[in-house]
Length: 147
Image (cartoon, rainbow, N blue to C red):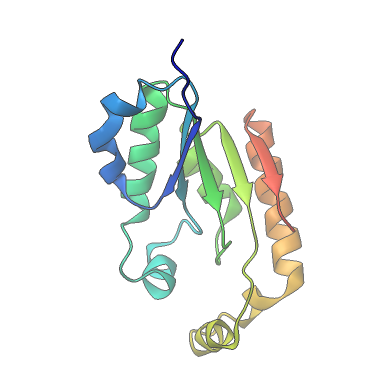
């Protein structure tokens, strides 16, 4: 009997769709996308060279439709609207992982320069992380929070 190792792919790029036929051959496979926000302006500020949020969400939808288990890694959790992000990911993920930003001074300076200081507070992570968790669980999606 052939032994297969489990595959867990975490990415920001929809290029993994090129390997969809290969991914389907594994018994234990899951694919996740890092999506820290619903807002393209925030994405461009913090991840200027990464693929668009929409391309990531569309890729999750394609994988999910192909019966590949999918997850979203909301980490680091950037400024976001929990309701909007949960709606965008609805029906596209089996699981959600949420992690906060661990701030080196360079990141704090970027937040302050963009006038995003309130998103540096611990209360932001607790409040918005809890709301994200609740919204996904209401949709039957399991959630793990790492803070």
